[in-house]
Image (tube, rainbow, N blue to C red):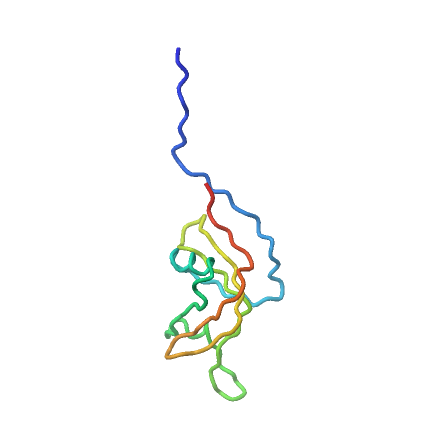
Length: 120
C-alpha cells in the first residue's frame, strides 16, 4: 500500500498579537484599499485623503459652540483596515498633522506603530 501525500488546500492566517498601547490616544478607524495600505506600510504614501461629505462631516470635524465655527477633529493615529472581512489586515499609523484642502481632510502620516498582516 502506498502512502498518499497530504496537500494543504487553504492558507493559514496567523494573527500577530497587539502590542501597542493606545490608551490616551485619539484614534480614527478607517477602511482602506489593499494597494494604498501597502504603500503606507512601505512609506511611499505619506498622506491619506478623506472627502468631507454630509454623511462624514461629524466624523472629521466638530462645531465649536463658543464661536459657532467648524474645525477639524485632531487624531493621534489612524487604525487602517483592509476591506471588510473578519480576518483583515490592519495597521496603526501615527498622524503628524491634519490639514484641509478643497473639501478633503489630509492626514499626514508618520511612523507605522503596529501592523498585522497575513502570513502563510
